[in-house]
Length: 500
Image (cartoon, rainbow, N blue to C red; front, side):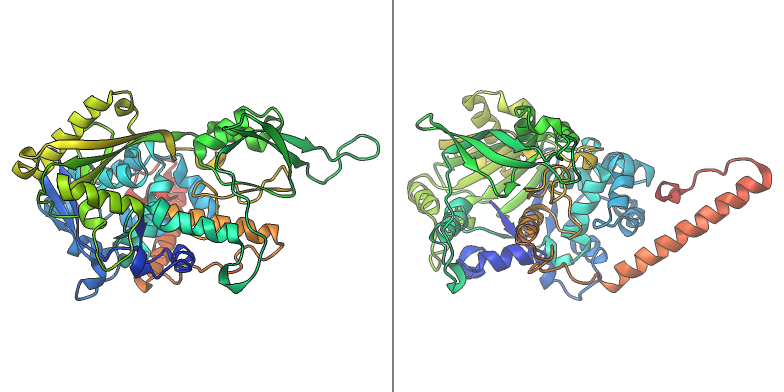
C-alpha cells in the first residue's frame, strides 16, 4: 500500500501524468488504532472534514478520538510543542542537535507520561519510522511528525492506491520512461534493466602533471554490471551516476567496492543500516466485518510495529480501473471472502519463523483485533514476503552518515531517496521524489530546486511558536549566565534546558 496526503505535491503532480488521482487513489476514510490489550484505542478522523477548523496541532489533539487514554496523559504531551517549535527540518544545525538523542529520551526529558508515550507516540514511530522510539533519532521523529502532522493538519488524511502500486502506478510510469515521449516532448527512451545488478565500479583519478592531485574531484568512469539471468558481466560507460538506493543497499555497495572505500564519504555509509519488514496477505473463507480499512496496531510484540489493511475495501471500486493484482484479489474474494494485509515492522524476530508459524500468528492477531467475526473465519490462502533490512533505520546519530544529493568526493555521483539530506522539509515518498528531482537538476546544471513545489508557508501560530521558543532560549541563556556569574553555583535544570 502507498498513501497520498496534502504535502505530497511533487508526487501528486508526477502521478497525475498517468491518470487522475481519483482514478488511482481511494477516497479519504477514518483510520483505526488497536492494541492487544484493549482492542480499538483510537479513531483518526478526516481532518479536512472536521469543523470548526482548528490550528494544526490543536486539531489533531481535539478531533482524534482516544477511547482509553486519559486527558491528563494527553496533556503531558504538550511540552513536545517546545521541541517541534525549536526543530527545523530544513536546518542541518537542528538535525545535529536532536539526532544523537532518541525520541524516547526526548519524551522522557519533556515529561511525557509513560502511558501517553506507550499508547500514542510509540505506535506512531513504530509504523512511521519502522523502529521503536528508543532506537529512533529524535530528529527523524520530529521531522516525520512535523511533515505529516504539524505542517498541515490535512497531511494526516490518507488515500490509498486502488490495487497493487507496482502495477497501477509504477508499471505505466516505466512504460512512459521507456517510450521517451511524455508531456508531448520526444526524448530518448530510458533503458531499464531490472534483471541486472551492479557488482563494481571503475574510477578515474584526477592528477596533476607532477603526479600530485589537483583540486578537481575523481569520478566514476564505469559501472560493472551482472545480468542475473545469463550470468554475463559487462561494463557501462558512466557520464553521471545516481545512487537511488536505501541505507542497507548503500552500505553493501560500498563494502563490496574497494574503489568506493577509498573515499571517507563512502566509508561513512557503512554506518548506515536498514530494519526489516514482514508483509503478509491472507484470504479468508468468508466476508468479515472490518470497521476501518487502514489500522495501526501496537502491543502485540515488544518493539515491533504492525499495520492491518482491509484490501477487499481498498481495492474494490467498480467505477475505476484496477490492477491485475486487484482483479486477482477480486477473483479470490468471490470464493474466499475478505482479503486482509497485515504488515510488521522492525520484524527480524518474525522473519526467521516458518510460513506456517507466521500464518498462525497473523490469524491470532486478527482474532484479537476483530473478535468473533475473524475467529469464525478460516484462512484458505496466504502470501508472505520477507524483507530483511529493507527500510531505512533512522537510529540516533545516523544523520551524520547520510549522503547529500551531490557527492563530496566524486564529481559525477549523486544520491536520491528519503535517506538523502535536503532542505526541502519533506519526508518519506515525497522526500525521495524531491531528492530525485534535485539530483536531475544538478546533472542538467539547473538550479537545484528548479520545478520543485515547496511545502508552502507554515500556519501563523507555528511561525509565532518558533519565534517564541527562540526568544525563550535567549532569555534562558542570559539567566543562566547571571546565575553562574552571581554566586558560582550551577542553576537547577529547567524544562527548556535541552533546547540550549
